[in-house]
Length: 113
Length: 112
Image (cartoon, rainbow over all chains, first blue to last red; front, side):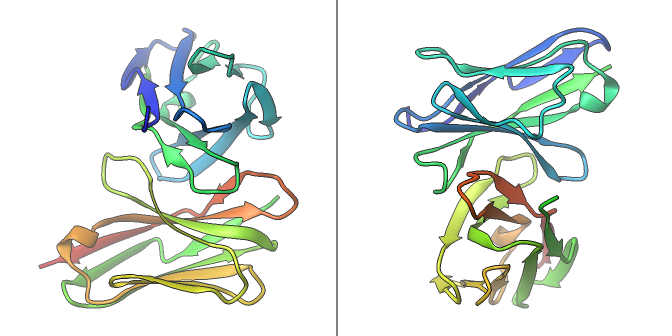
């Protein structure tokens, strides 16, 4: 498709529960990025993929966060044992070559209560 | 770590006034991109600057990339209420990192 599709739009989880977010990048785009946007609007880079391979995961809190981009499946971002501070909007973006414009999805708003 | 600083955080203007937001990187950038995010929305790509000293225009918007490829600015002439939103610069690091480092954004409010 011609837009990045993220599901769900909203997700509410109790503290300690698991959360799983999905992202279908634009067809033909090789790079996928995940960003976390918190209330102050700042974007925190989490992880990037080149096709199904992790390209850069320097932003991931690895003890609880994991992500995958498998062939013929939406990419996913999973948070085990969510914490209150994980409440944020998670954006997925894709780009054709990694150094060109990034197309963002609508985001998933995660609320941890 | 690598940082992109953006100022001001917030700008409130009367419709018709000009607006400028500035970005400064601690390291040389491969390119810089600008995005606009409306309240409740997602970032939408505006432009990419690649060359040292590059200047690009889109109607009332003028984008500049510094000679050292460390700083950039976005200038809007004669703001309109439709310009409301948060403008983010995002620097792509040199060396093939393919990671956009976002500035903190400048929230623009335009009053009629």
